[in-house]
Length: 217
Ligand SMILES: Cc1cc2nc3c(=O)[nH]c(=O)nc-3n(C[C@H](O)[C@H](O)[C@H](O)COP(=O)(O)O)c2cc1C
Image (tube, protein in one colour):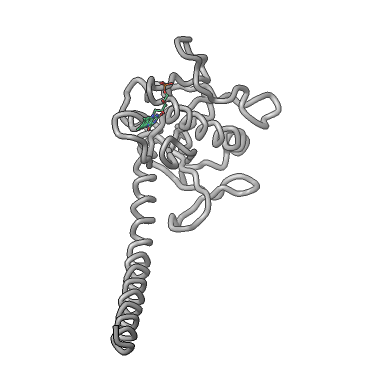
């Protein structure tokens, strides 16, 4: 190939690569805020699904000394969502949890009733588990029944859960703090148990300790 043609080819390829790079960055910048907003909306909508009976909610930032009410939901950092009935009575607090599943990270929201000391609902917000296998963590009614009144009592010194949330042994009746896994999708079921356990070990004692901070207004 003549030298001039070779330079022209390299220059053209360089320009195309540069242009592609700029377009990719622009597409990312243009959609990142929208994606984050959609994710936040989906999380907030799920609050009412994981706290049965809740008709109003308030958002709180998680700090060293408990919880601070947030008026601006766009603020970064860990958040929890308190759910109330029409008269403003606290029914539960919705908390985020995540763990590595079979394919990728599973992200869930669960409702915690600090008075009954139970998990009262769970919704998977994001997962890439195998359709028809791990994806049953989203659709299996049997599996979702595990999260109607799952015992997450805090221990006597208020430092952690009395019993870790875990999968029950196959064929055994689950204890009140155990989850009955999905047959053929044990890895995904275990990941949900692990996500909830990691979060509740930390958050249930904190929520219980600062219950008075969760006011509707
Ligand atoms: C292609 C393929 C995809 C799989 N996807 C999942 C999955 O998404 N979640 C899961 O728990 N197990 C999945 N499994 C099955 C796991 O490897 C494992 O066998 C299963 O979780 C064990 O459950 P069991 O002890 O109830 O049989 C998959 C297996 C194959 C071959």
